[in-house]
Image (tube, rainbow, N blue to C red; front, side, top):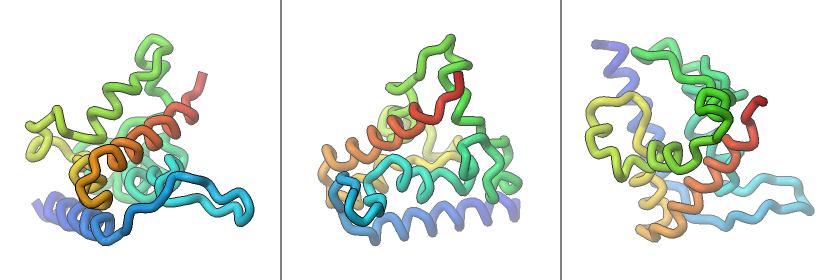
Length: 142
């Protein structure tokens, strides 16, 4: 029970920080080499690595607090007959079509967080999700 409460508190903290961030562009600044906050890599590091680990192989620092070990995200295509499940992954991240997820899964529903960051602009929130999915696709092992 205590681990679950700790998990909920950490997730709520993440959501609060995410809401506080302002919407930014998706461009990568080539002159400075900085990664913009809407890049897939930045989004992964900010929202996913805590559970899925820095290399997306599972085993992030928060993993021991979860009921189920986070999956290795570099194996998604391999486990799906060589086809990366981009649409299903986008739906899972967004959570819009998975309403039962609000109380029954450990992975946070990021769609509402991304929409609030974009001040309700659904296109900007979807862009974040698409960038995150494309980044995860780039990590797939053959």
